Length: 222
Image (cartoon, rainbow, N blue to C red; front, top):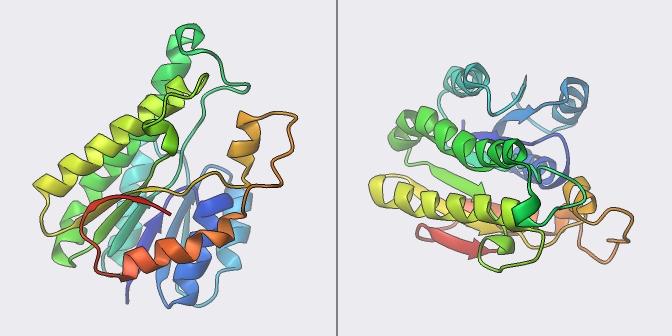
């Protein structure tokens, strides 16, 4: 049995990737904060067994529960750190970003993914597994009003490179999925029409190909 831990799996890219993994025969340990939405999402996944573990990735107990659920299924082969936050909508200028909001962005987008990777590394090492950290073009481009989110993703990019250097038995990918038609992207552009952005389902097969392929650790654009 191949096992994937996917955070932010109740909607958007996380849900699309969970569906593609499940359809390919993987068991999915799925995380999201909304208990009801997560339960419905996991119930709709093909195959199985799948496990819904509702909670907040910034909660150390919750991260432990995700690692334990993966271990119960035989151990994680894949971690997808997809859960993210913009912090505020509409997006403020960096100098006007509330410090407590900025701290929350960093905790969700950087600290939690690195901490969850640390918990799962013993399982991933044993199984020659992979880590996929979902990043953004805002981590490399200085877009106005994207300073908080972009700097958090830049930190995640660098953390991914360090993990890859420190963990040669595990492949670590930082993946920029591009602009997608998701609730979070809509929150970044309140009141605007984002229907020209592709659906997450259009990108999920490329991520699955990366997971199943033989690419070296590094940053990839989906």
